[in-house]
Length: 215
Image (tube, rainbow, N blue to C red):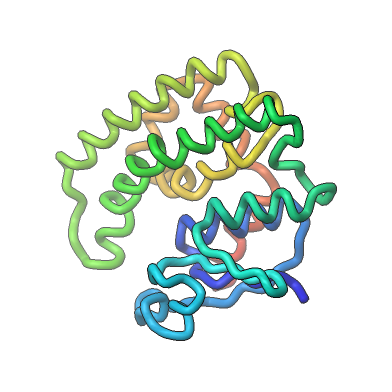
């Protein structure tokens, strides 16, 4: 049976799982969770994820939640298929792991706040963005991307010279931000801008975005 992803096609975390499966050329089933109706906070979904957050994932008798745990499993389980998103050399993988941690702890918290303020806040609760919060977080994001600019002067991608999970994990929030004024924070840094343009154009990511159009 094909793996199943329980989530919402507009959820950044769910999109992260979709993108990984597409990169690995793994067929999968999407089980839509209606977040507006609160399905992610009710049974049967909370039996998959007790924290009531999407996505959840099922592959045979394995059940997972937390998108980065799902992407890591898929990358290793389907070794030899599609794009090798991880290394099997311990030193190379240590570098990828480092930048995966950077994304999770430095990039994503700020980027997610900007996605909320500039896109989701009005969509879900009908409120306008807090301009002070946007400005503050754009400044913080710029400081993170300054570090990325230096890193990308040394390798094509964050984890080395090949596209890995360290890059892929950025895609969902980055996609949303490119439709806002925060795009300029990326554009202002030439190497970051080129990197973003490169990874956002990957066929697997285009397939992930197509799922939103089908919804």
